[in-house]
Image 1 (cartoon, helix red, strand yellow):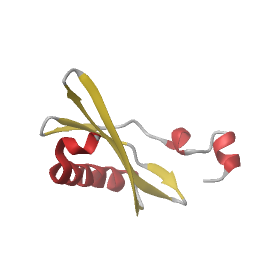
Image 2 (tube, rainbow, N blue to C red; image 1 turned 180 degrees about the vertical axis):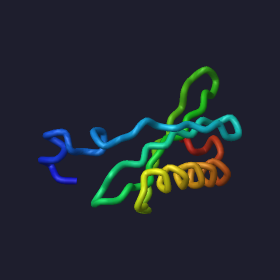
Image 3 (cartoon, helix red, strand yellow; image 1 turned 120 degrees about the vertical axis):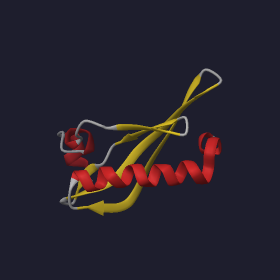
Length: 92
């Protein structure tokens, strides 16, 4: 993303739609796909409260989709995979 787009409000934050969340095995997954080069790039956040402290892991993948809805669907697929493979090690 170019410096000028970020500076004048054309960056991912300005293009974001309302995030959906899903609970999975004690973790909360939040979708955050954003528009990039005419498509939507896969991105999201995984959170979990451990010992009273909210832990957070954000992720972004190179995968891009034609629609926001398709990208959002795969955010949850990828996040579940990340959780299954890493568990709480995700927050180290």
